[in-house]
Image 1 (cartoon, rainbow, N blue to C red):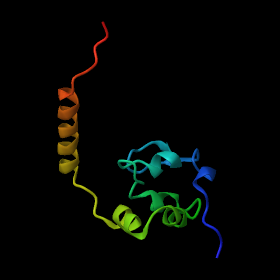
Image 2: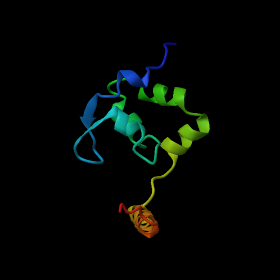
Image 3: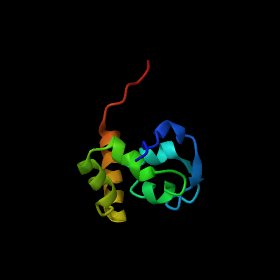
Image 4: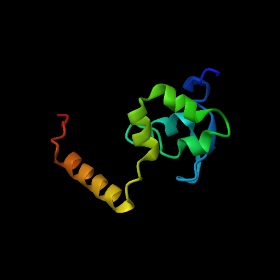
Length: 98
């Protein structure tokens, strides 16, 4: 069995993202979802290298399953989470320069 590819070989490689509709680098796909890989990354990148092997070599089996086999959040729940984050950010006292 061959060694899985290292992520540094592919960091700057670009493909068209079916989710965003434009070009993205592999480095973006690796941390797209709150620091975790995009759930579609294996499907998108497998034509270029062993993306599944790379992710499996860098993640525990539980992390891998949670990232790639969990159902995606609904758009509504994502929107509500973003609204909540924006509310919290606006409530934080901001440093004001004199």
